[in-house]
Length: 640
Ligand code: ATP
Image 1 (cartoon, rainbow, N blue to C red):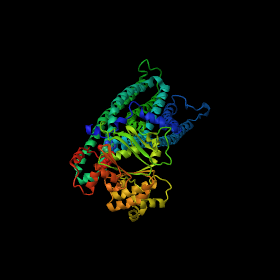
Image 2: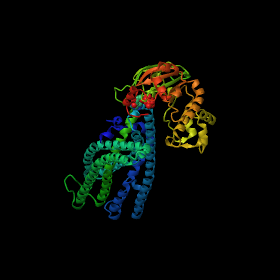
Image 3: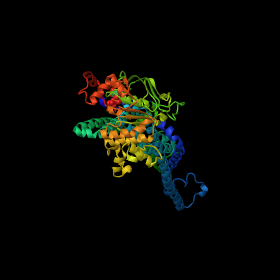
Image 4: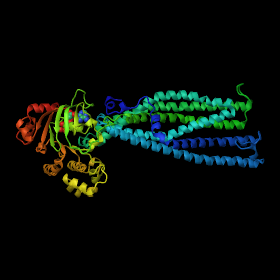
């Protein structure tokens, strides 16, 4: 795999090694469905055993009815029940044959029902659990993972389980039953001849061992390549506007071709191994059949071919024996396919189990404080933080300390990349601080139940996300039993009501993926309405009005005044007029809190804030040189 894709958000680091993933999942998700699984298993055994009947009836017909070589006799039936008349004997034998077919069909249905039920519910639970675990991971987990790759586990890998559980698993158990049943019957009929076809088993076992050892790593590569390809496709479709705007269709096609070729290569590598294995298995099993035919045929025609084989063998018994041998040996040919499917599902299962086992980074202590009636006193004490994904030496926040009293309106300003958004992400515990602490109402947030913490905070981001659904659903996002009036009131305050009323179906208008049918400013206003409805104790506005024009911003600011008045509010702003009235403005620069105070006090201080302000109101044509130099040193990644 080329280096670019190998490090490109791969999930390889969480793959569960040294564990039998399918078995692990079976124990966890199959336990409460054991009854249905067991009934399916019994039905499978019984329906397969019905397959023994036709060949047996044929042997009885040849030996007792057509050639009269031995007395008429049927296994399991007392002698007194057997008719004396040959015509009745034939009818009884065929009646049993017909009954066996009916029973086989009914049992087969029971078996299919049970095992499909088992497989579908098993897969459903794995999918939901994997999603739930994934979603509870700290944001750090997603920083170095591609969405497409995670989707690939949730979708492709989980679906891989389906085909294994519904088809191969079912077939595998049938094979075990058939081979075990037929093998036992053959050994019972004539164990000396029965040994010949059973010799196939150890040879097959060795070939399978070799196959598994070689194919397993190849299938791991295939699963990774699927994930990488998925990431590439997801990335490109998400950024289609940019692709088109820059005429980069050919460039992107090349990149997709590269990813697709990696997938092709990984697959081809596995296929070449697989297609060698299947014919080998067929050859071994066919050799077993030919050997049995040769020895048995010789025995019938000329007597035992070797002193080891003793007694006589009738043609009827040989026909039955060969029929059982076929049924014993032929399923083994499918064994290769099943083993192959198992290996494929195992490679997928390792990724699922890896994701399931990965501990959520942000956890709640058992004795965590559940926040109720929050006053909203927020305190940062000597906070240090750096993103794990970034260079370890790169500390994003350094020694940040401040206190926001309940109900205060705090502005956060500073050059791009200074760490303003990061500071707020820490408050919501998207990440944990490396050093120092953040307290809310005096409680260290690491000791607070994360759910209750986030319940008391609302966050309006620069790029609000709208889920596929109606505008109403998006404002009331996840809240139950919300009054329509409350939703509209919230929209009024957020300055969103007017444009919503003009939408084709008002509040019931569907907004597409990422709210593409709404403009950036409209999305921001819907998102503000969402925060207002939530009625949080602490409100974070991360450039919440950056996409709206000055007039609309003034309207929103006006309406927000009531909202802001009785809760602690943090507002990150590049447009300094937004935070001009803040109780306190914190100025961040390169991860450090360099100035703080009211607008007037900061202007008087004549530092960074005053410079930024003068540039914005047009008093300064340009930023001072040292400032520009520093900006050009900023890392170029855009991670918001
Ligand atoms: P802006 O005003 O442009 O939104 P900001 O002051 O909010 O910037 P942050 O988004 O907090 O800045 O970013 C601070 C630093 O952390 C930047 O150098 C950025 O590259 C880095 N950074 C942000 N998010 C991540 C992340 N998820 N992983 C690694 N580094 C990150």
